[in-house]
Image 1 (tube, rainbow, N blue to C red):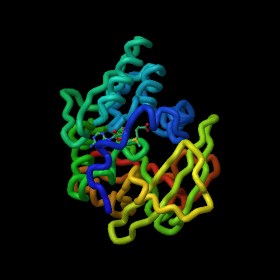
Image 2: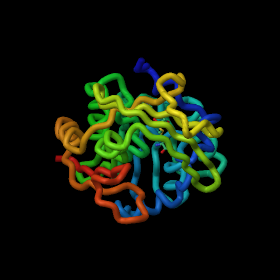
Image 3: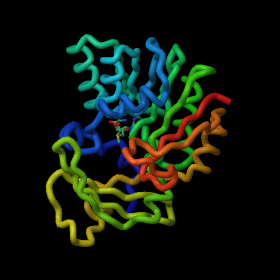
Length: 254
Ligand SMILES: C[S@@+](CC[C@H](N)C(=O)[O-])C[C@H]1O[C@@H](n2cnc3c(N)ncnc32)[C@H](O)[C@@H]1O
């Protein structure tokens, strides 16, 4: 059965600091820097920033960054890191739905889901886009990096072993077609990859409601934003966007 609170209790440094999906950050920031053609003094809002890996890297490169996340342990870790390195980055513990800043941002990022699809319902997910709109400058850009519904709904069920920069994660995926939800379990110890594991029975599964590009476009529209581009995310080979496992969706204020 789906635990609609999973996103509140799932995240910890112990589980995620060394997971394969958190690696390659410098490369990702270089890709984003080029894609967004950032001005040297750009100010960036990183929504659901995790333990601040992108925020800290943007800040090392001279940008002014604010990171927001619900997980206290992640926010404390990122703040501590910024202090140690004397970086101009601030980290705030907040639910993305409620976040409001006095200043507006050139760039708003929702990276590695940015919590889109984690919340209790589509109505709640819509509030993330409303937050983007409230905090984005009139000529600013929002970049959302999400899992591709088309890809996962076709490919599931499957399992994979992912190794990035020496970290290996064993992933199991199921597709719940009634709720358009991807059920994912990731482990850093080796599991029996050839068995049909039902991750929803493992107690530690994540439940990502995945949206089609059309649905995202409508949610952006409701928030007062306009989709401008869809690209494959962080892909070395040039895959057609809609065949890629992950997508980058760019939008601007209408
Ligand atoms: C997959 S992680 C991505 C973290 C980061 N963007 C990265 O790439 O490392 C998802 C993050 O969303 C955060 N999160 C989940 N629900 C949230 C909410 N309602 N408000 C703020 N952050 C949330 C989690 O605490 C977690 O850090």
